[in-house]
Image (cartoon, one colour):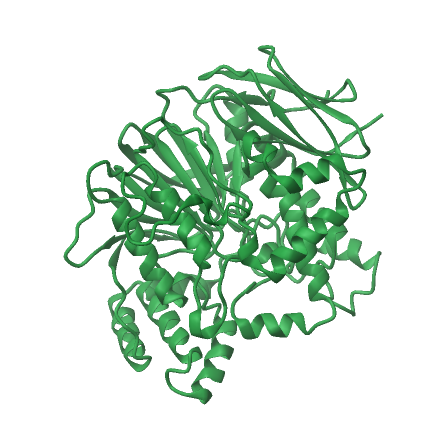
Length: 572
């Protein structure tokens, strides 16, 4: 009898359909049955001796929530008979419903070997406990996980012991993840956590990778990549990382229509074993990143989400270094401007120009294509503390040869050592994103808000930009929230607090002058934070209003973990 190894994860939802992801221990037919009669089935597919199914559920009623169960070959496997949690539900948005979008990044399932300081309560665990305690109360409508869902390079003691039992950890990547099987272990460790497992079964989720999903500093520079490719273990690591990401995260990001049109998904489902096909896809994605699109679009009524790949889509050559390759940048502009009546302005492109790339747009938006709120999800913040921004821009100039070969060599060492690889380390891309946001937020049909949602930097803050000689009609904000569950050393706290200060800003300007850096096309100010701790941020979007709430996971005196509100404010 087939058994459930992992899941269910409720992934895509709209007014009438949903997808539910599961991993099973053998080939089987997975079925989702809802209390209101909606249902769906899918036969499992096989990757590297693991079995998975993504079950499309149709016939759902907009604006309702229905309990569901999961069956494998006709036998119920979810909810477990001894579950201490409420039944999992599929909730579908109604036409006039608002949206509660919760987001964060950087979650250790368990602290890594060696320890890195105090970690504290897990914000996702704590959110799950609150939702479970009041199933009919307020809960997120969607959860955005903005990178570092697993840590392939910082593993727990338990995982290290398990890996040491299957191979020699003194060779290859050592006590880091080496192959697909070891990646599966990371997902089991993370998503079998009872609270997180239940939360992901009942709150829809959208995900994107960041560096630790593959390795720290992934795609920092061309020199970094060349060094990695010279090792005898990198190829297996990166292919396994991309393969596991596609299975465990990317598939659930896509709508049923997008999945039906995806040739790789069709091939994998129809094959007796889809491992070779998926491996070939991952090899192509690694060798030619422009051939694959990991970014995607989701429309939630009058809210548009564009989840942007700011890791694999980079152009790393120093003489044309960009965060997004040209096709990816054109896709982003097209998705932002669609429905604004000026999609071709300032470099918009025909959507057919790179239709062979994976991903795409969800066609569930209103018929006029307009939206009230634009969310741009990118794991790496666009607007950073001013000192950090200036140091990254200076470093990009040094590595590009602005001060000669010696400075270029030193710049590369500094870039890797200090993780200088955010949007500000790609100055042309930083400015291009600012121009696109200003275009999106200006003129007839402009949304009420444009929010850039990010994580990575292990603290939370709000920053608001302004443009010389131009004032967008939309309220624009950089909203950064991390970590969900990770350490925040004193050095990070002190460094980022100083980075936002006036002395730091003056120091940054001096550093930028040494690099002969052009001033950025936007200026910005911090309007909230910095806040430090394990935390989750929620945007509540109703009509043309937007409200932000930041909550931190804390331990009460009796040891109970609770979410405490540290910021609650209107954005529009």
